[in-house]
Image (cartoon, rainbow, N blue to C red):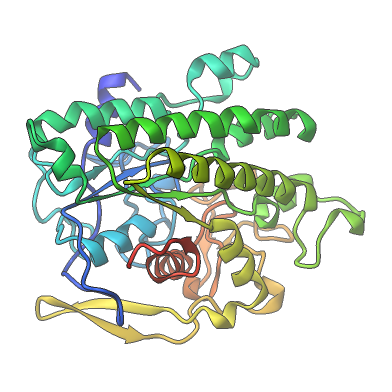
Length: 394
């Protein structure tokens, strides 16, 4: 896509927040806006503004079926984390339950915007050209570009008083890094080579965060990367007959080791960034630990679904929505054959792919992304802890 086309899509605020509600027991904290940056974990449909293109598998059925009843461009069966954060922390209203647009942005982004886009990387095109992987990067929305979109918006949003305005906003930056490593791993690069990229990826992310903080951001959530060795796509593509390659959770050790290395370096770097900018509140969101804990003990993650009744959101306990059976913990909900319900040649969104009847009882949706139920539990863990340090609600 041309740069202008991506930019026009990326600047649309696509957070779902049907009513204003705080999670039960949470502090009465609100932000005037949410600014989101990231990849398919955070994208709320930026490639589907005006309709999902036919070539985009994540824009086809059964994506979106749980909440919206149709594909919206989100890489899940329903809402993603930033949707839930938008519901809890702002008064924003853009879409109703069925994905119909209630109020067009019309260039007014005072409640924030979501710059995240499927396939986004931390590193820019010159890095991938340097390592011979430029043909593996298919969009032009890396971190630097998303920050550029954000900065271009600011004059129309906050005029000459942006630092005061942004100090009352929540920033969610990431996750970033997953697609940088995927580009190399899926191209056959060795694990040792890919691990060598980690310091550069983390350094690039920190420089981006510094730009955002200097612009006026105060409350900034920075997620680490997921335990990729537990996901069906990696288990299917890189599974072995050697039991020693797997940990006690049935996940591939070396791939989770890559994620752990990234996250450890990121946490150290964020601590240094916090010391440099003591006025900011930099929060590390621990994707890795929470997903591993959900795999080990899904019954501990009781989700409370929120529904809109008479103009307000009502919390309704639904039991352990991420309560998969032991044999299904590393299976995708979308049935695509194979040991883990994943077939790389017949992915979700392609002809013949059909979802399980109970996605709320699955952790993983399509082999590489999570279900709405999992994202809901993760959002709760970030809002109130213990999977965000410090917790967003304070």
